[in-house]
Image (cartoon, rainbow, N blue to C red; front, side, top):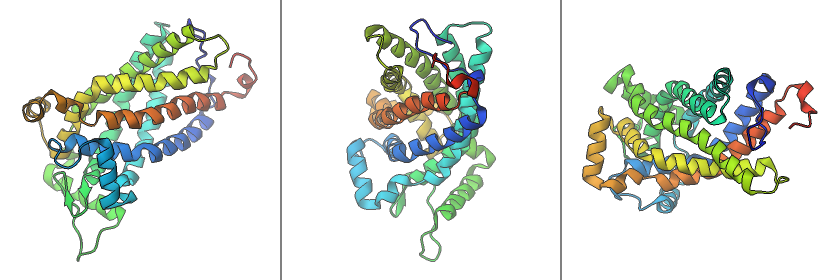
Length: 313
């Protein structure tokens, strides 16, 4: 239950599952509300040609706020909240896979690598259709669209949120059929499986290194709160090129990952692969701190009653 640096790890079998899921959904929702604007900004930066609309993360934030209001930063948010389901599937798969792998290998890095990749595979199978719809909603600027589809107005009146969602879903289905909702599925797997598989080992690696450099009485939660953003920045930097390709495949309706990659390099050079990286790291840093601190606290709050008073935690 402890790694070699003596940072306690609460495993699946120690949890009260009912508490774990209830607290988990509430925590995830709070995180989504706080970082969603940067998710939208990242997607727009990745899809735009060159710097045709925005010069960077801060410029995009100011322009969207000025032209579309605060609501513009939350386009597609309600649809995106359905990914809460995939989030719970992710943590369940992660914890169960760690438990399974521990039968054969007790190395924490190996368990994290396998569990992170497996959890992302399951989550993306649920998330991709939701992402496709929400990303097309993110592309709806005032009076125009950056993507393939544009929300239609009825009799000059703006559709309500779920009316816009329905309109986008109908357009996707008419254009591409059911397969349209899984456009970019492979690109998503190539982005998020490596991202998740890399994040967890780096998280534990940074935590172990910090633990060896700090006094023994340094709170474990503080080390974990620092390790999370470091791991997120590392994973984001390594996987951002594929994330840019994924966004373009899903929003622009492209069918080939390789051709999209070649076109991106030809039009914008190697720097095109870094588009949206700062927004991605900005959104990942606070959310990762909350996720790590919240996730570890969540597991402590979800401990089975007989383990609550154990001095081990």
